Length: 229
Image 1 (spheres, rainbow, N blue to C red):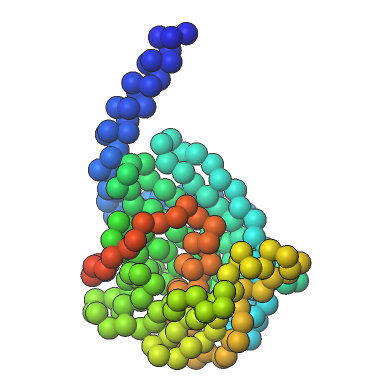
Image 2 (image 1 turned 135 degrees about the vertical axis):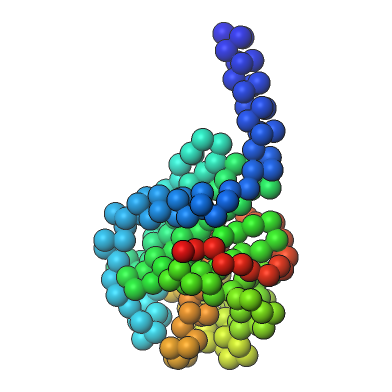
């Protein structure tokens, strides 16, 4: 019995040391994104179409499933409207190692967003195209240092979402909504334009899902590079 325990411990320590600096390449990441799509395919079937006029129906009605995959972790979940309709689904993959990359995939009935989370940056891809890089909740346009959106600090348990300098909505803090039956995600929302949609959704989905994921370290800025084909 002792031999098996020691053997398992040694194997774990070797694997931990091996994976400490594991950084998946683009080919591996694209393959994993494909697997993540399969992982949430059952939830995506029930996604309802929605637009800016329906966005204020989004609620913190959230279901999540966590499973271990080797030395990493994989999570999937979905968010419902106040009428219990599935509005978006997500999958999260955590690679092994203390310096690991992570992936977040978000799917609505109309759009797909991929967040490649690294030590210093979150690279965002909207419908397979590079949108920008996020650092400390400031979104910079892909290939530039132009600020195209940001999430402000908490104000009365709400977080303002800005596209350029225009405040589109506030996201409620879910901790303050636990007593509500159907706690809405947004407050004081105004209509957004088609040009603002990608930026707004990219910020919103990352913020909402992050409430329910393992806490990240402080993210610093770097330039984003093209990833998805």
